[in-house]
Length: 213
Image (cartoon, rainbow, N blue to C red; front, side, top):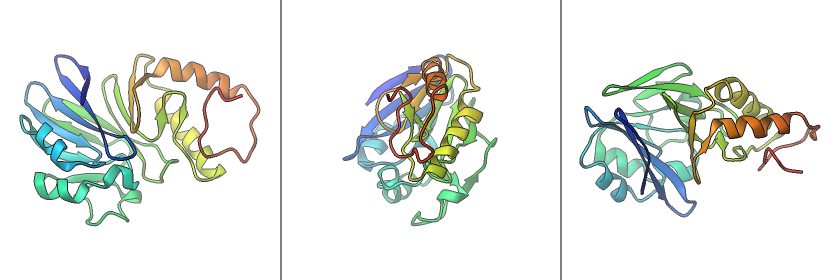
């Protein structure tokens, strides 16, 4: 449990949970104390305890893979707040989300506003959530590369999502991924420039790093 970002307006706390070391994020408006939970990997009791001094308003899902939703049913029962996800990732959830999010939607949280970015590739309904210079990216982009893809078509799709939605953001954007530590967008832009200058196998997919030989 680590506070990874904090300023006058916002606090972002990262909780690394479950057998896959999946990150859940608690985002809190510092003035109003309203909070949102982003992803529900495991250990619901720890998450609920961390939310105690806030006013939980939403559970937001970056995508529907099991390592990001294992605690969802318990958290929905305990928190009784609306679940928000993309329609294309809602199908395997045990109960439907109250809110279906689309690209360009804005989620208000106290005085904070989260822009919703639809970034398909890792899953068809993958979402990122942006508040100012902070981006919670799920499994779309990590330090050093994109999220894992299941086919060459999905890899092309995730690269398009990253180039059209993420690399256009300011260089000082802080990226908080679904696993592991954060990164800064300038570093990813520089490494992607090297990646995109090289020839690649048309069947490229799976786990890819920008600076792979």
